[in-house]
Each structure stands twice: as structure tokens, then as C-alpha cells.
Image (cartoon, rainbow, N blue to C red; front, side, top):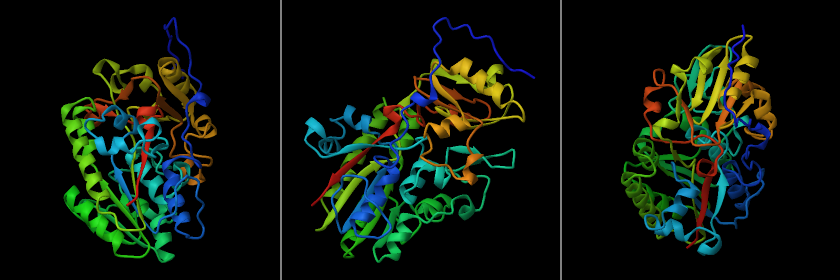
Length: 395
């Protein structure tokens, strides 16, 4: 059966997946941060690929949804963070690339394991479980799969702990036993605290408690405000100001011989209702598709047997002037998931992978009602989604 549509865009120009700005794995991505920190602590087995100086005590403060471009746009709401930006702004900060897709589960695994998505395997918000006609949500870990089988590599925290560095994670108690924490951030001591202020204070105390320490702390509320109200909202800007004050609070408590790195898992972009294409109402896009994975701006598309080539053609015809539409092998060859993809990860990637270049999203109003209602979205390789800060503070 053929699913080919007739495309009527007079100015249609197909985007080449090879031209997409693939993340800077190995030289400037989130997966390079903790290996560089560990190498500069003298832990064997790690190589530093980022221009950061050694420190005996390091805290990584990850703010969910805090994109580099978003800090640049809001100096009045984030005066402390903005002062840490590089270039003419006077700070020493620089952007990193989050990785593809630029989404929380993928990025947290990249941070914690020091590996790109093609190796750790959390290659999307939802991905197919190989051999099963079923999607797995890697943020909520539904349906349950064996965490170690899904992501078998040790985390950086586990490896530095074995080398004598005191490792700890200071986060919400809700995340203490989640499978995502186990596969991405395990190792050392998990310390749950409810408020951001409690986390900042405890992270500083953990740094000071050992001669060599690696501390990770996290807040999620900025991301939630962006999804719910958009990054062009007063609610989001007020939460940005709260995050700015938390970062300053932590920075002011740093002990000697320490460094603080503020970073994020992704940025965010608001997508208007008229720029949303509903997969559940579009016969062309849904024809031949067995499962729709990923999220609005970074889709994994799994075809029914025998239909992969037609599905790729249809998605290219319908969306290829606004999204980079690639086959699985094209996306891998272009380096979207890193320099290598493990065999166990290969079929988690869609037969077709679509990443938004323009202000567009492919939603699914019936099958994904919650996600489809979100105003702020992320996942693709545009600068506002992909670039995350690496902001350094030393006492």
C-alpha cells in the first residue's frame, strides 16, 4: 500500500537532515560536563573536554528548563545568572548543547552517565520498546522495564564514589527511588529536601563536609511554569527570578576549594495554536504509523511493517520544509544521538525521526491530551531549546 500525498507548497524546500545542527558531543555537550569535572578531580578513567579548572569540591545545580537564550533575554529577572554569562557581559559562562532530543529524561541520563543518548539509550520522551508494539515513557518509566537492562552503564557518581570522592544528590524526596534516578543519577547518598532553599543550604553543607566532594542538586518548577503558561508569561518570569535567588543563595555559601556549575537540561519555546499540527486528525501523517513517540518538537515515528519508506516520504512531503525529517539511519549518521548508537538502542529510535526547525509542533490531541495542552515545548535542536548554560562560580 502507498501512503504518498500530493504536496501543494509552491515554495517547498526539503530540509536536509545532515544540515541539522547536531549537538556538540565530545566537545561541548551536557554529557561532557561530569567527566570533565571528574578528570579535573584526578579520578582515573575520565578525560576533560571542557575548559574548566580543577576543584576539589564541585556542585552541579541543574535547573529544569533554564535555556541559555532564555537567561540572555531576561537580565532584569535573572540578574545574578545573567552576570555569569560570558563575552561582553563580563562573566565566564558558556553554552553547552543539551543533546538530542532536548528533553529531561534524555538530558539527565546524559549528565549522570557522561554518555550521549546513543549509548545510555534514553533517546526520547517516549520510545518504542523493541520487540513490543508499545511505547515506554522514560520520564515516568511506564510501562515498567528493568532499569539496569534499559541503561546498563555506571553513572559518574558511582565511579567517583569508588575513587574516594564523596558523592551526593540533593533533590526532591519524590525522586529518591524512581527508576530514572537509579539509571541516571545513582551513586553516593541521596538527600531529599522539599524546598529549593533547603536544597541550596544542604548542597553547600555537603560540599564543605569532605575534602573531595561531588554534589548534584536540582529544581523542576521553572520547567513546569513554562509548559503550563509559556516562557513569555509573568508566571514563568517570576519563577526565573526565584531560581536566580536560589543560585545566588548557594553561591554565597560555597566553601573553599570549590566550584559551582549552574546548568540545565533544555530550553523552551512557546508554540501558538495555529502552529500545531494534530497527528490524530491528520490522515496523511497517521497513515502507516503504528506508534507515535517522542514529543511535539522531536518525534519518533514507528511504521507498520513494510511502510517505513512511505511514512518517511509522507512526513517529508508534509513537514520537510519546517522540520528535519530523517530515517533512523540518516539521524544516526548525522550524529543526532552521538558518535555511536548501541545495538540495544537502535530500534528504540523511530523508523522516522522528525525535529522541528521552525515554530511548529506535531501534537496528538486524543492520545496525548496533557502534552498537547502545553504552551511551552522543547525537544529539538534549535538554539532556544538546545543551548543550556554552563555558569561557573568560585568562592
